[in-house]
Length: 267
Ligand code: IPD
Ligand code: CA
Ligand code: CA
Ligand code: CA
Image (cartoon, rainbow, N blue to C red; front, side, top):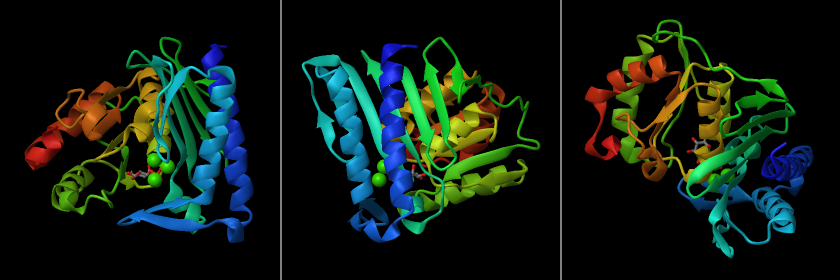
């Protein structure tokens, strides 16, 4: 196994076990508000601390960026771990059992290793660049849809960015007449993992952060899928406006989004 994948898996499982344990004791969970509709708990922070500890033990020189601690530069700026310790905090707080730990390793800006772990189902999605994507050791292949007919699409509502509500609803409205149905489950990392697994055929979301998609993006690509921004480019890396699916589904999604995009969403 890739040595960094080994560490990423160890860190994700440790954090996932902590999250699952705390899910059983809701009285020990303390939530606070970071912004409008945006929450964090002591469990997000404790899981993050555990992950950083595991990485630092093996790779003290690597750089780390996480949702709750921000940038932790190391001596080695070329290797960066991108971490979301708990993706789906709102689900966790509401006791909706769908959330994950997301860990990616980027070397010179290119993602090499990815892990997304769902502790409630004990599902570990992983990928190494050029070596395919796996779920609990089994090879993943994305969906094989040729167009939107019969597809299940996942998305995330822009609940922190309500200025995008109108174009978002218009896009959903247009797609809904062509796909079979939508899912909105509340963990972007799992949405991308589910695209990789073919559990949903396509996915798009506005304004994600790097830790939301860093691991999931590699999972999708290693399962034969495509990840782009809303106009087919690579700007999602900075804008967080992301589309994923097999190449034919992405093409169909982009074609439907085209006329509904505000200027801000073309980036
Ligand atoms: C959120 C989840 C959610 C997505 C949001 C993210 P968090 O991450 O991934 O599905 O819609 O945009 O911020 O805050 O729970 O780690
Ligand atoms: Ca958050
Ligand atoms: Ca997240
Ligand atoms: Ca998070």
